[in-house]
Length: 143
Image (spheres, rainbow, N blue to C red):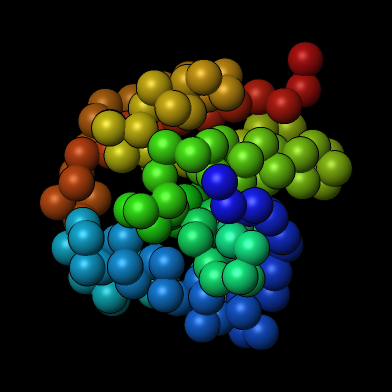
């Protein structure tokens, strides 16, 4: 089994790795238009990158300043190894360090159960985004 490291990265410096993962997963695999994927919000976001022992990027996630978590992606051949879980866990730790009251996300409906395991609860109706059904979810970080 490969050793995976999760690291906080800078969007500009680590653009190639972040871009590769998101293009593979969202644009090529899921058919998201590149104009929707590249929304102009990355530069001010917090980004995490999962890399394998060869320092090749295998997963990513971002969080905007308002606590909006998104762009969670793991390359197909690296899924079901706990990488997404580790990325989300690390991002939630960062959110708590920033003293955010809550975090929220728009989960693809196929991932709702994954986020629910972390305590996220759904709200609102299922909606379509890039022709993929999504469910808004939130997690309060203050007890």
